[in-house]
Image (tube, rainbow, N blue to C red):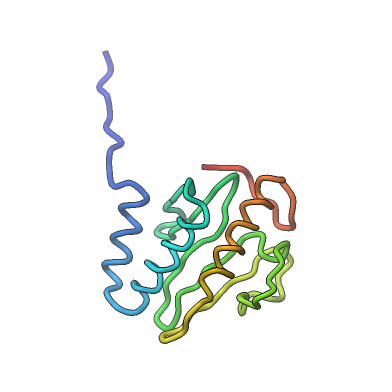
Length: 139
């Protein structure tokens, strides 16, 4: 009989927890807050850890990624160009054909209700299989 190889390790959610803790400043708090809003909007969201350390939230495809930089936290919606944004949350990657992003700098706040609505709309676009920048369905 072959030897069973353990693939156990930290879950994506645990890796995201670690990232938040490791940041240890306003960026960690911002990422924590935005993650909570995503989970409020989509309670059955799937958390993933991709591309050598990027938090990803998915349901019927990728909703958004959460990256941290020295001066900002960036939430990139892969199908953002297909989403309505009546509150004007998107402030980065506005020229792309598919993606749109929200850059959050120290001291800035994002309207929680508008953000949750944007996340729910992204899930709707994924579920319908539509939108520009269609990516494969994966969990």
